[in-house]
Length: 203
Ligand SMILES: C[S@@+](CC[C@H](N)C(=O)[O-])C[C@H]1O[C@@H](n2cnc3c(N)ncnc32)[C@H](O)[C@@H]1O
Image (cartoon, rainbow, N blue to C red; front, top):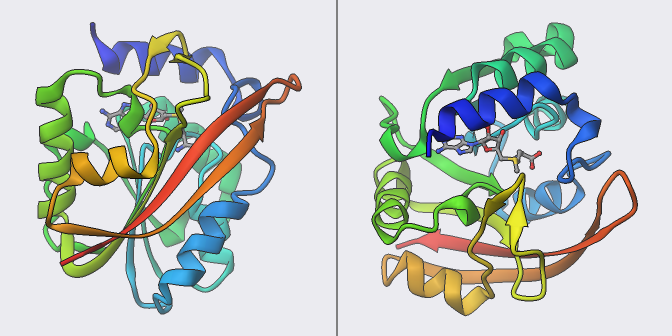
């Protein structure tokens, strides 16, 4: 499976409001960012930012070191286009999160609906390794994916559905689970999908 080609096609064929994961505002992401109490100088990474993204709302709230990463350059092109002048305040990176190594680690890792696509245990191990090398000790990670009562597929791809304990087992003893929330997301066409959010602090 060529994931890069899959995602490039999804972003070429669909605008931000045409996909199931579209939300008018990243309300829970912003709530959890606020709860971590990171300041405006915090280095924040949005993994698999897509087109709608968290970057714009973070910049609007005064965060000055926001990085948005996606495997698809079309996602990044559309996200920038959507943000207009505010896009200049964001660092944009086209990369597979599994291969990513930042020159300087981040204070906050945010992932909405990316980790759940890694069904292969080796990819899951690489995801945790990426998170560990790209996050400072004491840094936070906010992760959301489909909950056990959520759909089995997203964007036509199979996903791993998780509860907070399952996230914690995957991340291992290097991360402490400090928050969680079950969310019912409504797609643009009115279907309900259960998401699980989990917040971790790196030891
Ligand atoms: C379901 S969408 C979620 C987008 C965004 N996080 C949101 O909540 O609106 C998944 C996103 O992750 C990106 N993606 C998928 N696999 C990736 C990978 N291995 N590395 C980086 N980005 C990836 C896709 O291109 C897509 O934009």
